Image 1 (cartoon, rainbow, N blue to C red):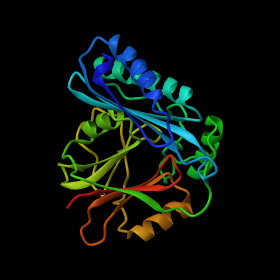
Image 2: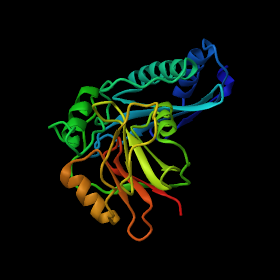
Image 3: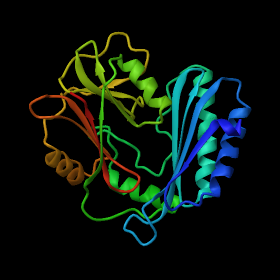
Image 4: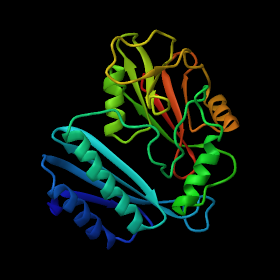
Length: 272
């Protein structure tokens, strides 16, 4: 099984660690009662020693389990702990996929990232930046300070699917927010993790709730604001939000600005 696991070690990680990562992932997959293919493991650093982001390890595994794509991403202060978390998460994700989907409880366990919360009445008193800093401290990862900027951009052809299907994809791919196009309204939308049910739907244009959803889901009553990138960055940082769903002025297409493990910002934009 080990030869079927592709491992990519990023700069700053010893190449000798690849064999151990491959063996540990293969051991988890070897005991599964499912067809597991396309196993890809990525191990990299969060910042660099002496940098504002500090030094930590970020691990990720992508695979197909019985034909369904899954992803697990974990971070920790050192390689051993990061791989422990990754293999634990992979085992749990595979079990969830093969046993049939069920809504995840909320709140889930604290991760190195801040818990992604709504900016509405359900939001906790602690801002996202404070939650992220506290979670990073528990994991032994210094949280960066200073101005925020977009360090990664991704343009994606959004999948047309129901909010239920989007929520299931979000869970399988270990996302806290998922951007898609809602065919019922023909608008870009997101589902994301937030209380009280654990799932919330927001669209670029305000609309009614989905018909007979299988997922326990609350609904944002407002459409996404139209903002430029600079305005979105300013709003996210000023309000200390973990992410921001907004619409591109002119086109109205959906975009998501989010906080990354390294303290920078990422932008996901719908391809025209």
